[in-house]
Length: 98
Image 1 (cartoon, rainbow, N blue to C red):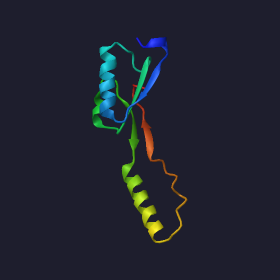
Image 2 (image 1 turned 90 degrees about the vertical axis):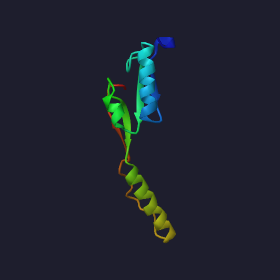
Image 3 (image 1 turned 135 degrees about the vertical axis):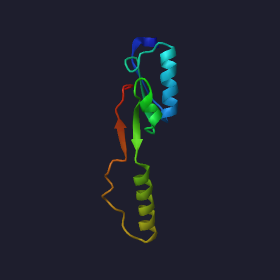
Image 4 (image 1 turned 180 degrees about the vertical axis):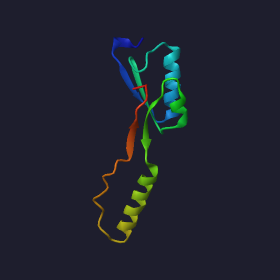
């Protein structure tokens, strides 16, 4: 059991590491998400096939790149920055690990 009996949250930099953490939690009999909530990033297929589907963050990389290129081009052309860049680029994919 984790020290202090307080639940913890772990945000992993990708789904592969989050899956390794889930495996370690299982080996150590740590209840996920009751004792340790684990969130990945990437929204990979592997994370969704895990016994408890991984909670993960999906990133719209295409939109991020297009927006960055567009803003860089506007800057090079001396055009003002756009103000309508409020579209969300990240979304939570709710699984069973957080």
